[in-house]
Length: 302
Image 1 (cartoon, rainbow, N blue to C red):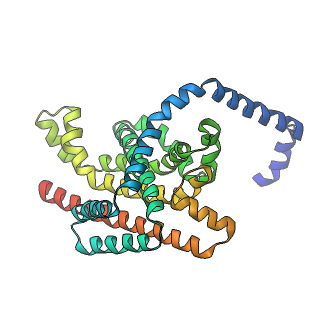
Image 2: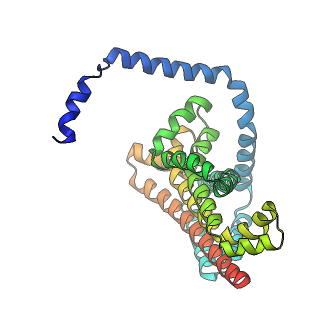
Image 3: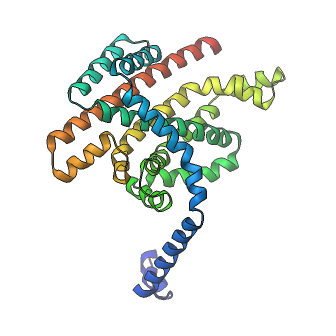
């Protein structure tokens, strides 16, 4: 007899929950969660205040600074990161077109959001990735959490974030970080674990401590893989910006959301073009920088 033939008999042994019981359970959980948030609302507000201040400062700096200065700074970062004149010229042309379309300020708001999200993801993701690389037990615990974070629909992240932090930029920022940080953690862990064991044995032979091995051997060799994690984090942050606009995040994502609601094809297309342009700039620059690090690592340790 096949297993599926036993399934109805197995299910009949368990009493079915009626709709009233399910509603009561849901209401109890929701009310308990809301009560917990109300009890610690002052602590939560104090904890996220530095993020609010930093995000507002960066956004104000990007928006109010003269556009030639911002553009020159971007071109300098892109050139010194990629050492590729084609990528630099492409960046200049893309930003010039964004300015012509009247999307400069919204683009600066989005850049500020992505910058802060990426910095937080790096600060959070690299230490967790290091812990995972140094402990199989930590890895076995964190991996299922990362699996859930990466498979959960992006809209679902907004529900607990809004319940805890309310509507605004910081809740959207936290939702973006939660969505974008898993690649940073995974690739940091992978990069450190892929370091050649013979190199680590040589470091042990020279009497290096665990911290010295991490600082002088593992992290430098894992840096190209970590850069790939930063690249993926930036891409996922840009992808999540449109969804996060539903809870008060401004910039290009807000314009796309309004275009969807009002069926403005041109507005949605132009703002989507700006997002794609930023994504390509970040992607090409970080990839080129990662390849340079890879070549340098091969030369030094090859």
